[in-house]
Image 1: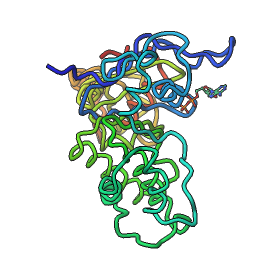
Image 2: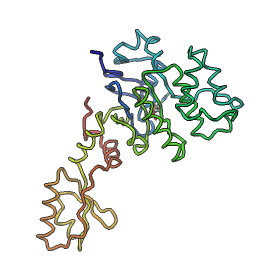
Image 3: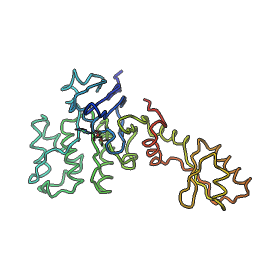
Length: 310
Ligand code: ADP
């Protein structure tokens, strides 16, 4: 059976200088067919990792395998099957979408049919004579993507592709990424610092903070994790009394409501009982589960919360 591992890094580290280690012990594991969101705040090490995967930075420590082969001994074989969008490619303002691709087509040895196919795929098949400089940002980004798709890659690596796009551009790009995965069978690694921009398209997530991985797994696993560290929003007839009664849960004030971190729903029941015993009227007792944004913030501000796993 064909090995389904597409990217595997082992104990990958990288330092830009003696004083500054940008990456520590990065163990990415990406399987064939996944859309893998690589998530973390700005400056957490995403681009550094992607540059290492693309051979744009030299591996100092650790190991990278792509398509089951070691990157440093099979670089050109591997990179031939990888499309990437990591910096804006040079596209010409006075040329049309098709003319721009025609400049690069011979370099990739792509056929005219392939060129026209990728133009259709990214939704730029009908732009005719319209010049690149007249394109919207979203169209420019899609043409850059078309260029990355010319050589028919098996793996696509995109660094913050939604940066600078307006909401409709983000939706178009998200739909395009899903389509490439579904119809062209591409495995896609896409980085972002905004959870909400990727959560609707990825199947798997890796969360990085200050150069180390905080979580790696499927979206479902992340939700499951969330259920065990949920918040309960509480609002009663006397919130000060509620804080005193619930002091060992460390409630935090958040406007009108109290926010309490709970491990499971049993604790929610205990809290409800305590409030009842204190004669407090409960106006609101609302578990906040599946709040990915909050979980992302938790994961990137309390690094020891959850160890990453495969
Ligand atoms: P991200 O892509 O998550 O925003 P980066 O990988 O670009 O993060 O950066 C990770 C850390 O490495 C940051 O602190 C950044 O300032 C630093 N860094 C990035 N590139 C360089 C460089 N060429 N020289 C020195 N430090 C760098």
